[in-house]
Image (cartoon, rainbow over all chains, first blue to last red; front, side):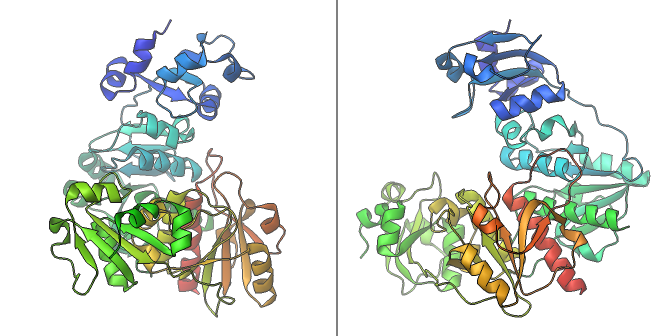
Length: 247
Length: 247
């Protein structure tokens, strides 16, 4: 039985790390969770919220709405809160033939991080590697922003400069998203590849910038100084997919 | 002289509409405002905040930080608040040769609306037409999210079904973003064109859906059910730009 103090402690990174657990909240996300088969340590819900969900065999506690409101982090949607085991994936090997991996360098905003996982999932990118300065994906705001893509994309933690160097030596194409790079549609994109996106405010870190690779930009011709990291990722992944399907 | 009660009233749509004014807040946005040449009715700032800005000839009031904090809507960045005249553009004519116009149908989230203007600006789209159900672009959250692109993109209000029908008859290609449409890279995109994006939750409205046009989707191959409207717009605009530059 999961106690309320454990659930509330999981609002904070320190306890998520200590317990290896995180929260999944709200109907939409819990439906995605149940479809994923990820191990659920506990689920708390109002009687109404749980109606129609496949919860047979799950450690379910039915609670009054007022009590659930105090357990979750959401403004609305707290009528369903699940405590879930984190996979905490170790870094995998270099991308396999034909694979595209997304690597994130210093993406600190949980909304952007969640949206990036959703973009990866949409475009068929199966692995996202988070480097230094990235917000943890188990942050409740990030979990919500993924809209469930978190359960379908493998998220790994790694120190990017060493990893990218190693992958490059092993034959992986390294593409560094950079405002001053070559417009993506002017490149013949090759796979296996890793596409590295930098932070919202500072772009790529100096350490990642020093890794040998191809600098790639999103073509633009207007007056905006920059695109948000998620907008840029969407445009770049779209072009990777297009060239793969065309090739 | 602009009084504090007028400034505070502009937090609300009703008074923005009545006065034909809106707020521009924070250093970054005010810099963009000054570069734009848009008519400034009043500017309130702390002495520190105004340092280094080109404010000669502007109706500037230097105020203490505590007073400014009560005037603005931001959590931080209220040390600079400008009151600006809205252009309130009438609907323009059909797109000219080679032009791409973005039309928005029911985009109600101010953050998404602002990001869409930023995307338009990035990809060189000079006009955005807002149809029924769109949040007003003068909403402070939207203004912030544009990062200044609001000053470079012409925003028009129109009833989309009639407008699109008229433009189509006049020879404009109408592209309707729709999950079930043809993947964009499989189409030979033609201009002049209007790209119509629907609401975050409901897609295109029935009225807009009934307009004759080409349904276009963002290719995907993962498990995500949908892309956020801004992500989709970024990917689609990227492909319009690519095909134009390649063609």
